[in-house]
Amino acid sequence: MNPSLVQKIESRHNPAFKALRALAQDNSAYRKRGQIWLEGDHLCRAAQARGWVLDLAVFAQSRWERLDGLPAVSAQRAMVLPDALFNSLSPLAEDQKMGCVIDLPPPPVAKPGLATVVLDQVQDAGNVGSILRSAAAFGFAQIVALRGTAGLWSPKVLRAGMGAHFALRLIESASLEDALALGVPLLATSSHQGDWLHQCVGPMALPWPCAWLMGHEGQGVQAGLLAAAQRCVRIAQPGGEESLNVAAAAAVCLHASAAAQTVQG
Image 1 (spheres, rainbow, N blue to C red):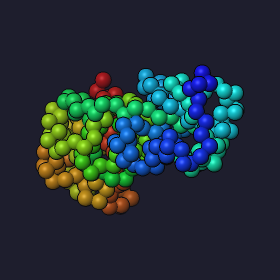
Image 2 (image 1 turned 30 degrees about the horizontal axis):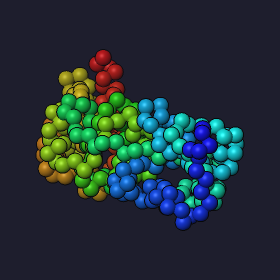
Image 3 (image 1 turned 45 degrees about the vertical axis):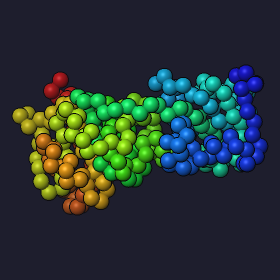
Image 4 (image 1 turned 90 degrees about the vertical axis):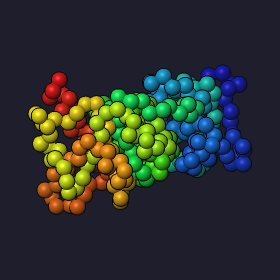
């Protein structure tokens, strides 16, 4: 990389470092600044592999020295921080002390006809990221996050998503009307009504494409959305627990859809 494009920062009071720290630690900063912080080599490579432009690569001094001046990813410019400053951004392992900044993409609108997961006020960032990862793994193309859902591009959701973001069409702050206009069957889970998921084969096979509705961790899917669901299903729980964590339930349901397509195909 051209040395003129490498910025070395020593002080935590540097404005560029302050902006970077906000991106790394404030779950809403990406909306205000129009940029996203990717933590660690894996996320940076995942973005680059999908054709995203890496604006800034950030390295701890120790990691930069081991690279012998050759960045591990192709970014337009680089920043090098003392290890202590980098650690205040993120406590990554010694061999992972790097990250990248990318521009927040223009917000897309929900596209009808796609296999979709609708997140209805799912508030835990770990749950949201895990659901995105399952969606990408099982062939779903779009996430529609209704207002009240954790920020899809927040640092915690990105960490939990493990690169799934870059394979998905992501719509934030969507309305109930957006979900109702998806043009595919809406499927919801319930702990006390509906068909057993493991029996949804043959004439009862799960439709494709479809939109799975995943609701708030405590309250579930809101009444107006649940009433619009063409089908409710139940997940067998022979162990007797009252309900599954929403991310676990999503993984089971999305896998069932993917498996149904494999059998029918």
